[in-house]
Length: 114
View 1 (cartoon, rainbow, N blue to C red):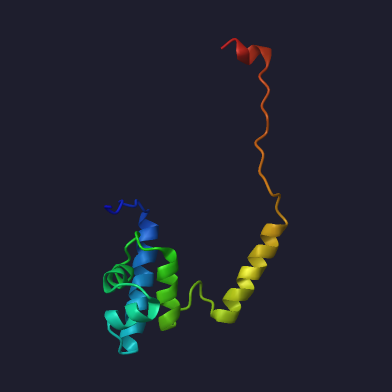
View 2 (view 1 turned 45 degrees about the vertical axis):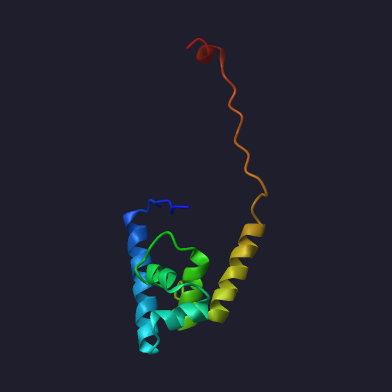
């Protein structure tokens, strides 16, 4: 099965490239090869190459696993702060309605003529 092309915005491309570069630099600082990091993350070397080059087709879970494995902080937060931010986000979402309903727009007699 062929990979599907994923269209991303310029800002998304930049973010993927920045994160890929951070992962690559952290890996190199540890003295690990792509194959070393791929084995630790549980992906192929080809996938690790795609992560480091900022490919949008790699699953976000694999990218985040690679980042955490080499110590790249995501969203400027480390482990405990990231967990706290997740709980805070869940608490905020719990306050929102479970469903969003679109308002029913009634047609007036004047609108129906058009």
